[in-house]
Amino acid sequence: MWRASRYRINKAHVQEYFKLAPVTEPMEDQDDRHALYAMRNDLSTSICWPANKRMRELAKEEMRRLVAKHGEGYEGYLASKLEASVVAT
Image 1 (cartoon, rainbow, N blue to C red):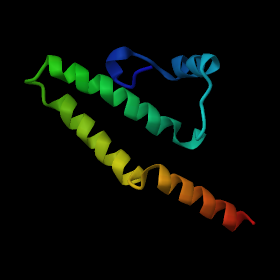
Image 2 (image 1 turned 180 degrees about the vertical axis):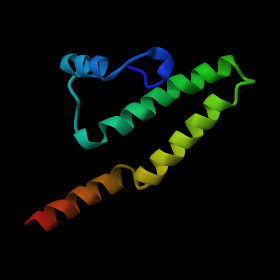
Image 3 (image 1 turned 60 degrees about the vertical axis):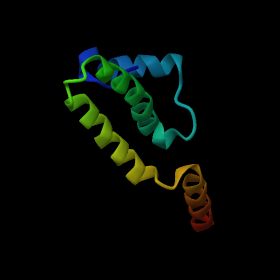
Image 4 (image 1 turned 180 degrees about the horizontal axis):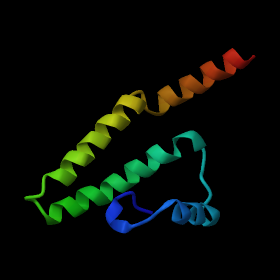
């Protein structure tokens, strides 16, 4: 499943994909994991056209977005889950 518009995948395709391969935990960051997986393909594709800097710039923007959101890594995720469970009790 690819995010780039060149693959012409829409919401209906994604829904069908999730019927075959359900979203795994943590479900709330499924879209970010997908962005991370898609980035590998986008960077590999960009190698084929070294003069086209746009694809690499998009990948860097996506990396920055993911680092800003998940900069604490898995440990930060666990801490936020623990904090949420403490608040809920």
